[in-house]
Amino acid sequence: MSKQSAVEPPVLGGDDAVAPCCPPLTAGELSAQDAERMAAMFKALSDPVRLRLFSKVASHPGGEACVCDIADVGVSQPTVSHHLKKLREAGLLTSERRGTWVYYAVAPAVVAAMSAMLDLRTTD
Amino acid sequence: MSKQSAVEPPVLGGDDAVAPCCPPLTAGELSAQDAERMAAMFKALSDPVRLRLFSKVASHPGGEACVCDIADVGVSQPTVSHHLKKLREAGLLTSERRGTWVYYAVAPAVVAAMSAMLDLRTTD
DNA sequence: CCAGGATATCGACGAACGTCGAAACAGTGA
DNA sequence: TCACTGTTTCGACGTTCGTCGATATCCTGG
Image 1: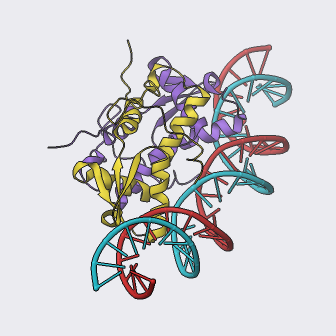
Image 2: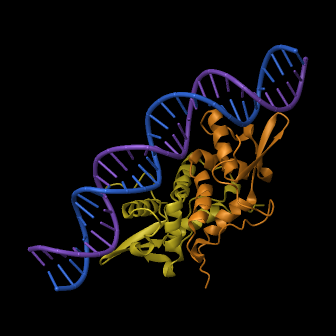
Image 3: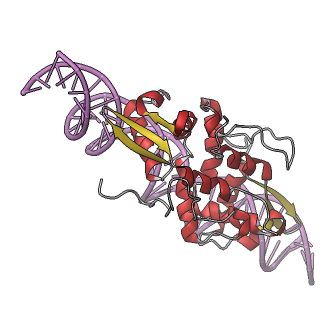
């Protein structure tokens, strides 16, 4: 593919930097643009199979796992690959080929951004 | 309607109790059933219009707003109502009619459950 | 170079989704 | 009671999504 996807991953300082996208939802209304961007992240976790794949990666030591370790989620292998691609495009996972196998790892910053957004503490 | 929706809202102790659904994703693999349940919540926030509506409610004083106050999100009024219904069915918002107007309020426990789930701190 | 396993892409299909206008419902005030 | 406003429901339409089997690509070992 020539383009990553409709959503480009948010600008991040690094692997463990806090994603700068959006303040908590209680802090103010989301702009249409920010809503579009964040909705894409939530959409990535809005499928049960994807959520299971993500949890399998996240719960592996180091937040990293080989596809072969997590592929058993009740759907065909192409479907697993399709879902992992979606998670990658959303910026929630990164992938790296090491020899025969491909390893997927959690992108902590993006996940942290989603979590922070759902923090309901008021700002006063 | 006779049925709430495909997903029933998670069992909660009260308005400010921590939703008991799921531990952080790093703690272990999600069961297929839990994945189904949590995916439904993420799906509720996976649409830009819904995310904006939710943020408008959440950022109002008291986490509560009249439909008339938040309906300006660029889609028709029936569509707004449709999206608010989805958010309600997912357990993220509650609604109450007071006279002519209907007020929607954030359900803190469910939102907190999602946030907690995305907490990437390891458990060791 | 070739065989074989691991992963990704392609093309197609049915189901679910977001959107709208029209119409129904609910509550207020004259 | 009736007119009016706010909100929900209904029915339909085009689009997006999840899934699959077939196939292509990448890497390793012989």
